[in-house]
Image (tube, rainbow, N blue to C red; front, top):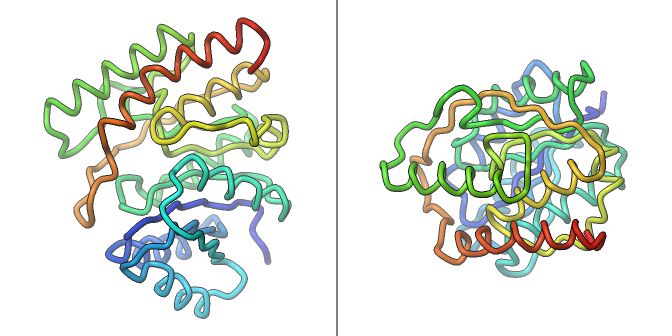
Length: 242
């Protein structure tokens, strides 16, 4: 029986993780389908996905892109795929096990119970729930989220959360072609656009664990983009050009 939920996982050089994360997701009691959006990983990530597709036909999907095109465009491509294939719930998730696959049903169930339109897997909802981050990175992340909340008025503590579930109506309403940001700013933009479109956001506390395999995609450009993007979103909203 096809699932009404699609987990979107953007990848670039995740050969160490992708097979294990797919196995865990396929074993969930609440069935989900998975779409891997791979940006031409030279380490063979896509080949591992293809092997798993043969084991779970119809449940694992692969969108191969030429070159590293960025997180935001990967998710937008995944969102369009989900809408085209009539999924009811669409989930964002990393491939590196910083997000626990067992938390996926918790996010979906919030939407199934109609408690929210966007269920946000939050690192800051009940204190700070982050494992293995250095203090400097923790301070930077917490400060960036506080800054984004003050500027945008978002009613959530983890504005840059990359683990969340949307009802399809949210993605149908948002003009996906107008989203240009990547990295953390992409997450802020999705939350902000959902809020301004009249949808409800609810945080669900999760434990975030720093990756143990592979290389972090964090960079200074991603941080700086998030800093100025909140003002761009605020200005666009004020002049009704969001």
